[in-house]
Image 1 (cartoon, rainbow over the protein chains, first blue to last red):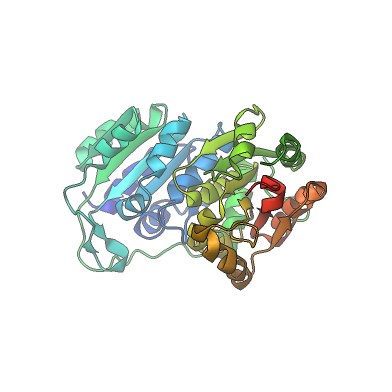
Image 2 (cartoon, chains in turn green, brown; image 1 turned 30 degrees about the vertical axis):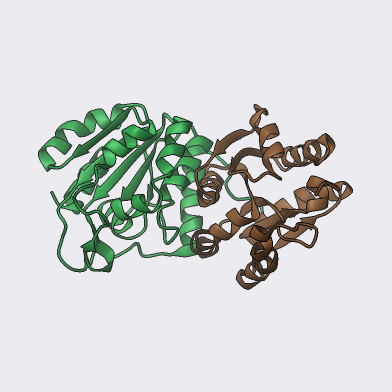
Length: 200
Length: 170
């Protein structure tokens, strides 16, 4: 399956979940599939979307938080799995788009390409629910149960590496605007205060 | 060794800030404060495997409407500069850090000397504000430091000086 096909299946089962997306391919594909403002699209801190999502999930237990991670980002911070497992956030689901390449920079191969079992690493870190899905039919069949189960869960979506630069365009706003759009979306969706009375 | 009163005072000030989440990776100066926080049911404590995780956890918590602090040693702060720049500076997300001020002239440790010489210039370069608490009577500045982080929408580093945390112990 292709990354966009997998992401579209996730989006169909998203329900009311808030998403946090790793920078690059994951963020661009999620934006392309959802155009959602109750999603945070990382522009930097590669590897730390997982930590951002964990902070959001434990701060707001009534929110369902989906992390749309990617293999390159995960490998930059595998320790995040230990921290996630330790916190046992029932409202957090971790998805990894595993295309085995650094797609955004021209599909150069991932470190240890093809030999890494990320789900096994997650199980070793303490995730009770970790699996790899490598075709669209299985993903469609399993996704209702995955969306319904308690977190923390870890699901690797093994997708085909696509040759060359992926031209999926990024979201059409950036940096501070993203902060305010996402923060205001969170305030509206959960009736919380993110920004103070003077707007910061 | 810092007196019980210093760590109790720091803890009290964090509570005054409205902080209900702390993410930490200890060095020996901040470890007693982290242990106090661990025992406080009003603050959720998240031990992390790398200091930049604490930065991103606090950044995510911001969007959940939760006030937070990242606690670490000076060396840990240096490891976070990329994330502080590309997450917090990039998106203008405030984050409040409490960090041991290692490598000062009263901290004669060879493995801290670079931190002592280069950390403040690095923060100056990024235009990240910081403040050093040197004496127990200055601990009351912490809520103002926290609010400055919010107002300036960027990382704020509160350094804990050696005299404050270790007294005359060498």
